[in-house]
Length: 331
Image 1 (cartoon, rainbow, N blue to C red):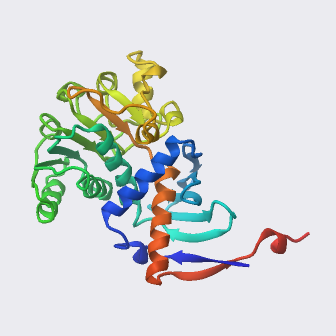
Image 2: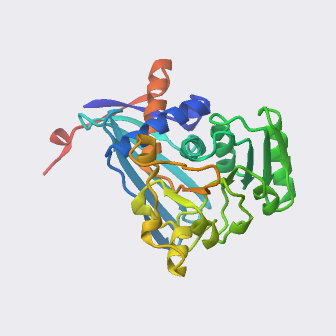
Image 3: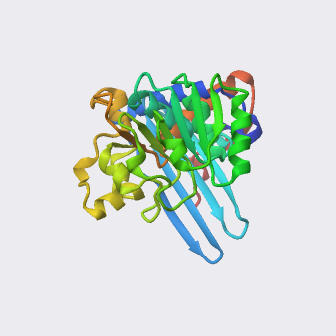
């Protein structure tokens, strides 16, 4: 038998500040850039009742951890459930099992923040956010740790949502946070643009991007859904979280590919290759860059291991026991 730690969502909440997620995820992508294994998500659909099971995994050998993410959505409950198993990469023994919902916006946001740090201009000071949900909030909280923004513009088609978002962040950021009435208002003149929506169609016109803008798109990961139009992809230096995902479920890239405005060679590099220094990031001040974030096991394992170590230090969690296969298998 071996003991592992079960961490509830309440125990994970506030266990680490946004900057700690960014540091852990940056190191995870560095390891990926040096060859750490990771693959795009697998998605399985149930027609009746309508629902989805999704999972992905990664091994971070230098961290000494491996694991992934499993989550379900729908099935008549109109809700989602997130489970994160974490294993020792050397022994294979389970280390922890996390209720992964509360960490989700921060570990995903941390991947976006790492991309901003690598791809946005050093003098970036204006950020436009399209979307106001938990993922948009996580993106802003983490990204604000890598750049000192003077102005944040937030757009949602629902006025109440963008106004409450602005009020909430205006109190905690050293920046002017204001709601805007159109997505163009969030995009034009911004140095960084983040899309975190449930839209299946492009949320802004790529011709509105100023030279030198960085875009992080993280709200869609389906062949048939996209937040970015073909113009944005065509104009930009394109960086996905995983190269394989660009032609698997990156809807924005696939639409541009189908339209014939780019080829598969338009994929500049994986984020990990840039973090590891094997591929260049931004090369000029007027270059438009895109990070297409669909979610991977890289940020999940990196964040989960960081939270696990903090929980051990604080004495949090409940021990649960697992039997090794040599003992538990019966014939």
